[in-house]
Length: 224
Image (cartoon, rainbow, N blue to C red; front, side):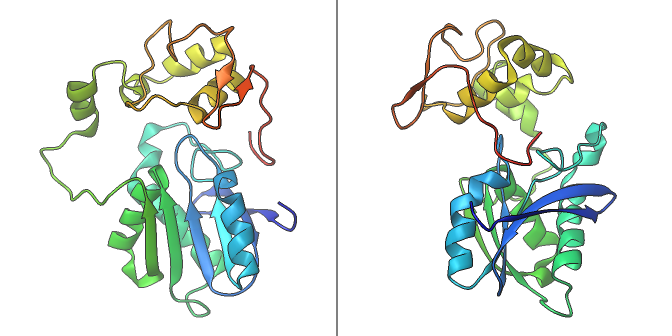
């Protein structure tokens, strides 16, 4: 990660951590859950070497970026507003009117909204894992996931503030993050109470590459 610069930008009423490298046309990378700018470290280096300016923020509520307390502060309008304010700061429209956008997972959802709300700022979009879902007032996301996958689906389990935080604290934040990032079951993520990841907590975690790890995990720089 040599040469990647870390900065803090004041945007849309919050402080946002960003990682960037290179000069040239700007590429905005938007990470997913439960990730940070760090997910794009290889792409940042690779595209910077090809003559691009690669920029990856920690989105609102993640890593080194502020996390407002109210759930009402996390609408798509808030998160897209953060990104437009960020672009106005690092790439003013009079200097670079449109940028490339790359999104994954939650970042892909926000990238779709960014294109819908402010197409004047997007040159091209490349998204991973989440297709465009047109607005349908009959579709209630949490209720739909609960109907399809049950009450233990991870998004359903995350709805009551403080509950999952307490359960993750019991097993340790490092173990929780390692389990999430190493999840290998080809099914939706389920987090049943008392058996969060479906195996004893004293067993090693087997990552997607087949390596076996205990609970120790090293967090990326500039992460909380």
